[in-house]
Image 1 (cartoon, rainbow, N blue to C red):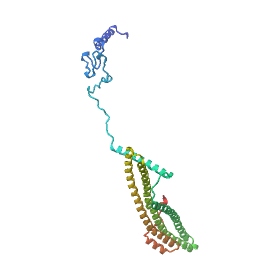
Image 2 (cartoon, rainbow, N blue to C red):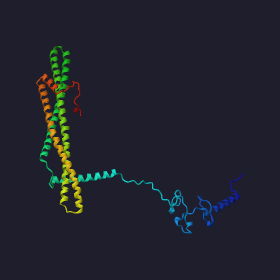
Image 3 (cartoon, helix red, strand yellow):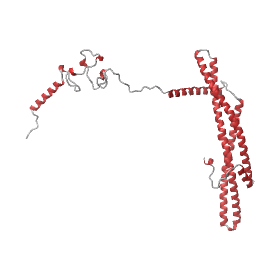
Image 4 (cartoon, rainbow, N blue to C red):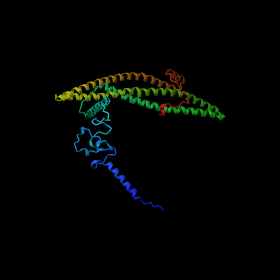
Amino acid sequence: MANLQSNPMEERDMQEVISEDEGDQYGVGGHRRSHSNPGSAKSRPQPPTSLAIMPGEDDDVEQSWTGGLAQGCAPVFQPFGEPALSSVSLTTPSPGKSNKLENIKNWTISTYKCSRQSLYEKLGKTNRTVDSELEGQIETLRDTQRKYGNILRLSRALTSHFYHVVQTQSSLGECFSDLAHKSPELQEEFLYNAETQRNLTKNGQHLLAALNFFVSSINTIVNKTMEDSIMTVKQYEVSRVEYDAYRSDLDYYREAPKTEVNQMKLGETESSFNAKKTEFEKLRSDVQIKLKFLDENRVKVMQKQLLLFHNAVSAYFSGNQTALEATMKQFAIKVKSPTSQPPSWMQQ
């Protein structure tokens, strides 16, 4: 039976092969050859003259997998002496970013000046521009808006309550009519009351349409026409604070020592002050014009609406159906059907 022991002759042959391989791997002087560049030392690539390697130092420089990058040389995939190209794109900032920064800076300065001006005005440490006539008109406008808002609130409440009254009268008339057919002994009385409720419901629909028209007109005056003027007034008040803030700065630099920096600041402040002054005067003119036209328009609209309200309410509660219908035709008001939904403002 064969055993698994090694053959001494085969071991000796293997040792000779290994010795020959080691001899091929080491050159003269016992230096080992690189597997990446086999051959003699004379066939190895020489470093460029720009590296200024002194004689006798060539043996100390070994090639690495980076192609000599560890010793300060360029990679093997790039020629020696050629600078590497950067992959980072060098772009200049866009003008839009500079404009945004400048706008933020100007806004911050203007906000600071206005806040300081408002605080000093409340503390009584600075003067403010006062237009007594215009400010009186503005205060009158705000008081009028509050009072008209109260009229609007009460008118909406009246319309809502009266809508439910009309719906109740309509339901009550239907109930009377139904009982008239089921109660022969009371048929005449039920029919009489059913007819009365139907007439009240019909007239109530006319009055309800007139009230809705009145509420809609008052709402337009309060929340659109007057509110538009109030928004212009707010812009005017902000412009007035900016105007006073730059006026205070201009007075300060005029009284400051005549240094080069102060003179430069004086010129910048004067330019800004002139721009704010122009804006302030324009908004003041806009407010005066809007207040004038608002007052004229308010008088015309309210004359018509108050006449409508008086005629419709008087005709309904006096039982004058003819006068009520004439009022509806005079103001071209359309009457909704009894099955119509409540006004949209009630659902909000």
